[in-house]
Length: 217
Image 1 (tube, rainbow, N blue to C red):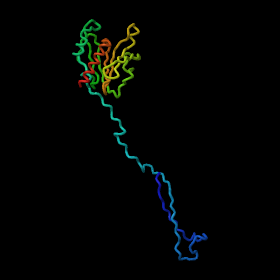
Image 2 (image 1 turned 45 degrees about the horizontal axis):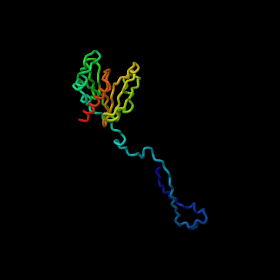
Image 3 (image 1 turned 120 degrees about the horizontal axis):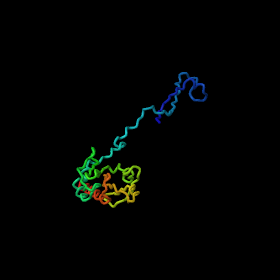
Image 4 (image 1 turned 45 degrees about the vertical axis):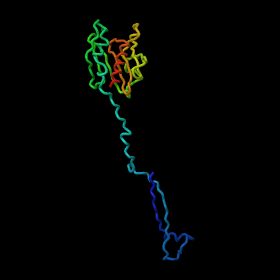
C-alpha cells in the first residue's frame, strides 16, 4: 500500500474569531491571521500497473530440456558379435541364426538386428535415465495388457531386471524371457527380442556386452 503525505495548511482567519479564548486579539483588525498545519495521512491504493515486479530470471524458472542420449544404439551391439554369440543356435525352421547389420531409427536411439533364419529381431533402445521409467516396466510389456514378470538381477549397472512374459506360462512353460533393462549413469538401456527366443542367458550376454561398450566409451 503506498502512503502519500498530504500537508494541508488551514488558514485560520475570521472564522476563529468566533471561538472564545483561542488567543489573539479579536478586536485587532491588523493582527495577522493565525495558521495551523495539520498532517493527514491517506492510504492510497497503487494504480493498476504502476508497480511491477522485476521480470524473473528465465534461467531460474525454465527447466532446460532433458538432454537426449547420443545416437549410439547401433554401436552397443553388432551383427558380428551376435552371430559369434548365437551362431550355434537354430531358429524356428532349423536354420542357424544369421543376423544382418543393425538398422538405426532416425534419431539413432533404437537399433534392430533381423535374423534371416526366422525373420524375427533383436532390438536395443536407449533413453535418458532422467525421463525413462526405471521402476515401472508395464510400458515394456511384450503382450498388450499382460503385465510382465520383473526379476531383479545383479547387473550390469543399476536397476537391472529381466522381463518375462507370463502368457507362455499358461502353456506349461515358465514364461518367455524377452527383455533386459539396466541403467548406467544417466542412460537407460533396454535389450529385447521381438519373437526371438534366446533365453535369459542370451539376454544377459547382450546386456553385459552393451554395458562393456558403454564403459569403453
